[in-house]
Image (cartoon, rainbow, N blue to C red):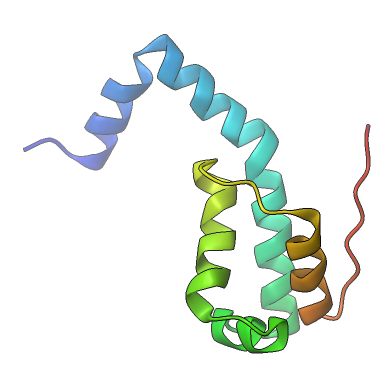
Length: 95
């Protein structure tokens, strides 16, 4: 049986997989890091954020996971609700 690191190295040997991995690292991980940092700083669990948003903890987990998987891009309205639940405001900028 292969280890996680061996499987990762095998997957990343495929140029298409490596390109997508690098894109996620570059584009999506900073947003997820920001979101998770804000939630930690607010001292809130996913369940507490969900309650403030008027949704379920599983929806918050999917939102946070979506930024990693790229399977679903949350709407601006959803991100605004998430930010408000943390006592923050959403700011979108182009660099």
